Length: 207
Ligand code: FE
Image (cartoon, rainbow, N blue to C red; front, side):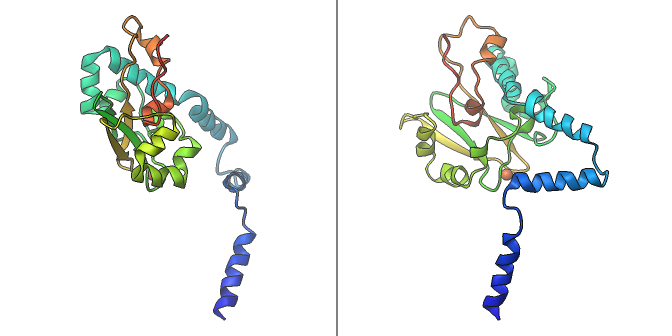
């Protein structure tokens, strides 16, 4: 009886689409069919998160903090308010905390529970950020994970792991690269990579 039940359960599941994209498509078709969503609104929403909101926003925050000491102070004290000064706000960015990399500390952000991520400044999270592997290993062996991303942290430098949640979203303020003294804010922003703001990367080297 029990095994039979189990079999039926598995059987039912095998008929469901396993691919998340397929599920999303199915839901979208249903909602459109029922007239619950407007295709134009949906396209605009996708366009916003794919093209308008992305790591380029976070890069501007970082570059401003690099050139403006007072802004940096505000950013470290109340990141949500300081980021809002640049008009970046909204869903998944209501409670931001910025953690600063220094010669003594390297910060890395993860969401161990799911995939909490600061959308207004980084856009949509990369696939690896949502993976079980990244979520579990970053806490257990952060230095190893970092080295796999090509970031080799000196043993003397402390690695701090920050667990993002629905309540708090972290953004890393990377160190300004050497040799960028004569660069302006716009030029500096181009050096700020997405991964450098998650902690799994470093800013690009100045040429
Ligand atoms: Fe999460």
